[in-house]
Length: 419
Image (cartoon, rainbow, N blue to C red):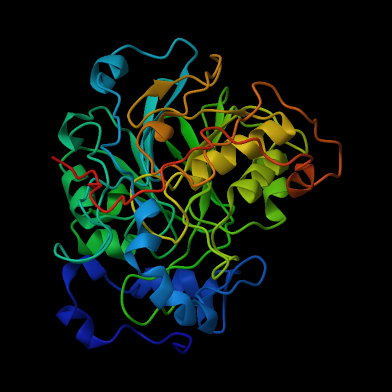
C-alpha cells in the first residue's frame, strides 16, 4: 500500500497513455484530506472484497471451456434503435429523457441540458487495442454526431467507464467534466484543461449549465494500472435541474447507503442501476439484478417509485453469467416488487413519464436457456410489504416457455461484432 503523502514515481512517464496518471500536487493534497481516504487509500462506506478469491481461479478452467462461454455472448447481432439522432432532434415533452447507449453509457436530457454518463465509444474496454473485452454490438450513433452535451459525468476510472479515446474526442467540444476525486489526473494527462474539470469528493456538489451534480457514495474500487493502489475515488451521481431528479449508480455493490442517498437527493424520476457483471466471486463490488432492484427501492424511500433503467450489461462480456441473465433477472425482480422498469433497445430514447412497454428484445438474439424463457407475469403477482427484502419475494417457481429448447450443437453461432 502506498504510504500517505508519497508522490508518484518518476516511472509514471513510461506507462502507456491509457493507464492515465497518478494524482499529485494540489490534487493529492485534497485526497489526503478526504474523510474517505485512510491509511494511504480510498475506502468503501462498508467493507468490501475488491477481487476474486482462490475459488475463482480453481473454477476458471471449467468456465473457459467453449460450451461454458457460449451463452455469455449474443448468438445473433444485437438490434439497435435505427433513428436515435432523429429522435434526439426533438426535445423531450416532459423535460426528461434517457437514452441508453450500451453498458453504463447513458445520455440524459434534463431541463434542456444534456448530461453524458460514463461515455465509452471504444471497441474494447482495455488499455490495448489488440486485447481485452470487445464490444458485442456497435455504438448506436457516432460520437461526433452527439452534439450539445453540457456535462460528461464519470463514475470511476475502470476502462469500461473511462475510455481515453472517447475523452479525447470530447475535448474538441466545450463540455465540462464532473469526476470523482483523483480521476481528474487521468483527464489532465490526456489533454483536458484543468478549468474544464469539476472534481468532487462524496457528498460534494457542483453547478454546470443550471444543473446540480452531486457525487454520492458507492461500494467499489478503482485502478487502471497494475498495482491497484486505490488512489482515485469511485462514485454514484445524483443530478437535478430543480424539477427532475435522476441517479446513476456507476459500479457498486449493495450497501445500506442507498436509502440515505434517496432521502438526501430524491425522490428520483429515474434511476440508472448496475445489474450486470455480477458474480459469487466478487459479491461486494457489483450488484445482482435483485440487489439492484433493492437499491432502486431503497432510493425511493422503501417503496418502488420512478423508473429504473438497468445498466452495465449487454455490451461487454465481463462475468460468467449468461449474456441475457441481467435483463431477465431485472424483469423478475421488478415484477416481484411492482416496480416500473425501462428495457429499451440500445439507442432508443424514452421519457420516464411515458408508459414503459414490455420489450424483451434480448430474447431475439440470446442463446436460449436450456429450460426455455421464463414467463414473467404481465402485472406484479406480489406486492412488497414494508421491511420485505426483494429476494424474499420469489413466491413461485418460474414458469418456463419453449420447453423444447434446442440441445443440438451451437458451435456455429457467430457473435455479433461492430461493423
